[in-house]
Length: 399
Ligand SMILES: [Zn+2]
Image (cartoon, rainbow, N blue to C red; front, top):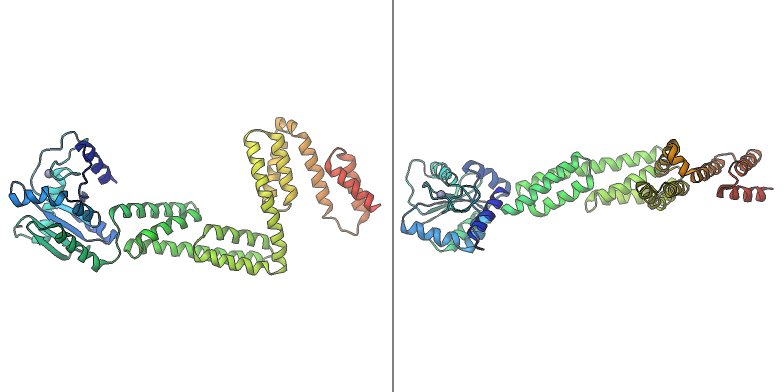
């Protein structure tokens, strides 16, 4: 990130659209960790000042768009021991010969890379070495050569390594993996799954991709355990909760084998008698859900009478559901607030009448006397309510 910002700052300072090599500025040792994560070779260019071949290389190869592109596909480092004038107009101290870094970076890289590659021997510059992430040499280019010579030696090393990521791709994949882990910590499974799928798309086959795949396996294992839990809910008699959980799993794990397994478990459940009843209950909940949303919207806008009416409707559509419990809780909160209770008195009164009507469903069908008494009580207590109308009709039918 810093490197990119730096490169842009340099470009802005130059006032030119010319691309610059993506030089690694994180130090020689850290380059190996970067190369391992991205599964790319390391290219080290040893160059010096005030020498014809070196100057020609810096003014041609390092400005060749083909070479600039190559530096994005590996960890490219420039190793030079001299100090150069700072780039005029740059916000931070920037080397004017190797853009995007202060001279201290290419100098410390020169020292460490020379010790690593040549030991105590001297280097005949310009000289470019390609290393594998494990530090072994994968080839070198002496003197100044046409650009394809550098491209070939990096490509050959890349072939040995297999799938890789550019610095940009790694940045995206790394960000996605971080997002996935944060989502997992927050139990936001759907976000974690989609972020991990994004990592897989970019990093598949790289060591980094394997790390993400391990995380994905752990997430999928969680999903499979949740499917087992849903089956236990069904075995324990709460089939509606089992179906609800399976539906959530299908949404959270979209695009993974767990979604498919959840779908199969859902289908199997719906074939049972309990499953059919639970599915009917869920269908009611699905109808009630947008009404609950409307109620919440109205409450947010402080339109309490409308909110109360919609909450009461939601309870009526899916009684006995968690959704109804949530709606009922809001109505009780309205009742507890003196000012709001005044505004929603009618809705609360109708709601109480409806609740009384619903309670009759719980009475034994044979107990006609109790049912009749309860219906009459509704007509007397809430004469203006729609429930009273229904109670009257039921009384007429019964009588
Ligand atoms: Zn410099």
